[in-house]
Amino acid sequence: MTTKAVWDLYAVDIKRFIFSKVKDDVVTDDLLQDTFIKVHTKLHTLKDDAKLKPWLFSVARYTILDFFKTSKQTIELDDFQEEIDLQSPEHTEKDCLRGILVNLPKKYRDPIFLYDIMGLKQKEIADRLQLPLPTVKSQIQRGRRQIAKGFMDCCGYSMNKKGYLVGEIQEKENCKVCH
Image (cartoon, rainbow, N blue to C red; front, side):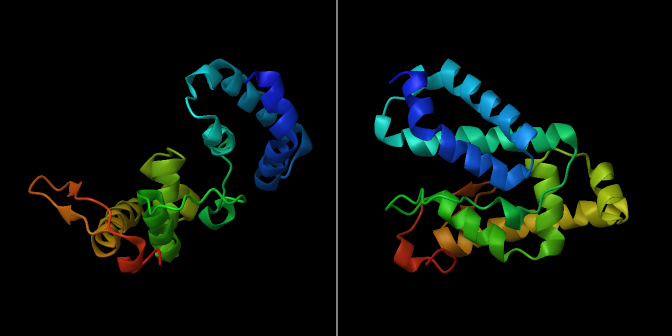
C-alpha cells in the first residue's frame, strides 16, 4: 500500500483524532503532516495490512504526545483516551494498564503522566502542580507501586528478587481490573 492510498483512506479520521486532542486547526494540520511523514518513512516496516489502522492511530498518538512534550502544554490523562475501537479480542497488558491508570488516584496519576509520559523533570512537575519536590517524588514512587500491584492483582504477574514484574497475562475473565 502506498502513502497516498493510506492518506486517501484515513487522513480525515486521523485529522479528527488529532483535532480532538489539540483543539487548534493550525496545530492539527502540522501534526497531521508530521504523522504522515512518519507513516511515509516507516510504512514499509508494517508487515500486516490488517494492523494498518491501529498502527496509524498509534503514530498519530505519539506525534501528539511529542507535541505536548516539546510545547510544555498540559493534558489530562482522562482526556487522552483512545477514540476508536482498537480493542483486540485477546486480553493484553495494555488493557490492564489502561484499567489500572484509570483507577489510580489523581494525585498519583498526574505526576506519573507528567514524568513518565511527557518526560518532565520532577522539579518542573512540582512547580506545575504547586507541590513540594519531595511530595512529587513520593507520589511518583507510590503510584508506580500501585501500578505494579495492579498488574499483580489483575494480570497474574509477580515481583522477582530484582524488583521486576514477571509472569504471563491471565485470561480476561480472571482479571479484576479489565473485566
